[in-house]
Image (cartoon, rainbow, N blue to C red):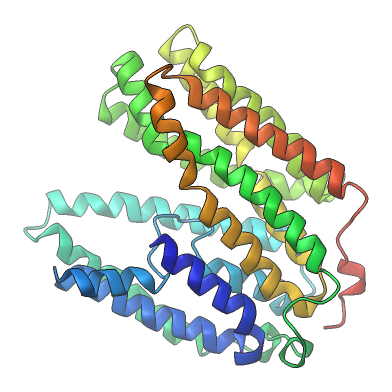
Length: 346
């Protein structure tokens, strides 16, 4: 799946504007339909591998592969009169809430007398519906100049630096995946799956609210300041979790951290497409997102042997790496505001 996401994202970075954002978007939904049908209807390994390599199968609700790269580029173009940060805040809120509904729908396995695998047909149905909806997108989502130019021009260096920094942040996040957090609570406090389910559902709700709070903070303090100065405290809270004296205190730290940690998502997405020229948005979004996708799985690989030494160490290491990212990002880009005022005419 990771290889597919990376390959599809790079293909979009290089050809997204030349082929057309809408065409790519429609094609992704159609391929997603094939992938969903394959996972629902067959056990043939080669076919499942082919479906995974399409890059349209993702375990993430927010920032889900090549779709996100295209959407990140199209949103500011399609609604130029709307504050881009507000667009991304609403976009991520809807995605998170929809993902929560999808998680609840997984409970249908216990109600319906069907094989769990067959429920993946819903993935294919949603994909076909998405493909139909893309036909209604206007020309506003396209990049006019991008089809005649290389994907990246004067922003090549900026995108490289951002990609490196985002890779560091994502690598740090790989130390503290949801699976690891669940494992840690189970091993440390004997927390039941039912309790963890409630806590993780609460985390999703807090994240949905935090996207809207981030929009308001960005309007007052700026995108970069909101990204860094909400993310940095959340990383410190993350590092404190293994030192919590009780399960309740650990949950409190986790929930507070969650309320802050995702505020950088809509602001980061807006900043990436705001700091480059309009015709560079597709490539900038795709390359920076690819850097995140590729490095995140490395975190668990490095964390695994560390668990034998200290069960709580990944919290501290992850928090430290992500804090280093925040400080480096601020130092490198504090004097680079978005170019929105220069991008009003696309």
